[in-house]
Length: 307
Image (cartoon, rainbow, N blue to C red; front, side, top):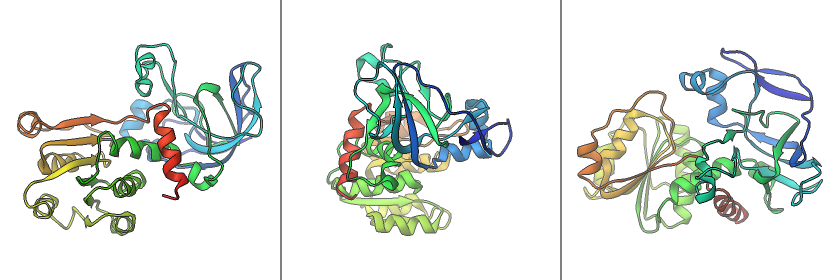
């Protein structure tokens, strides 16, 4: 079969012929219909500082996909040949403290699809049955393939209620834009989006942003404070992985507010914990993946509505 493989400790990937993977008794072989590109895949392609510390070639990359079940192992009970499926990209162990106490997304022994085991940029891939998600029939492949990153946005936005809240979104990449639409349909009263890319800012307005800010040309803190009558925002959603953006979020979140962080930072971040967190009574959530599988139900239902 053909696959996209990271073969070297250097920039780039290869499109090459590899063997079709074999399945074990509890595994599922999936014929990939559509696979989408994540920012993580771009980091791996560019061989950034973060990728160099996290990824070990050779490996088939990719973790966002939808496909059909081509074959199942002898002990598989809930999936059958022909089912249209996606999958949770965090391959959890099911046995550690976190898995058995409702925090499987931070499983101590997890493997990440396309990072620690061969991924979805291939004609076929193999996954254990327990991470398979049966895709709702009314969700087209082009949407079904982004259920995994859309779920990241769902968890980032809905770590707490956002209805009637003011929200600042830092970073208008795909997940930040997903978050914009989710915040809108969940009733946020004011949505402000900051991103240095004007094209993305234009999309954010279509997705529900009331105010779009280019931080290279405008003062984010000033605009946010003016828009909120100097109260600051209730909620900051940080997707950029940018040190300066995070500090802008800390300055503009109101005392008693909430920050959810999905962005990945290549370097250490310096913040004044006393001034910006402790004395402001800020709640900070680190978001790493989706809640297995409660987030997938939310994601599928959002997408089923045409969101």
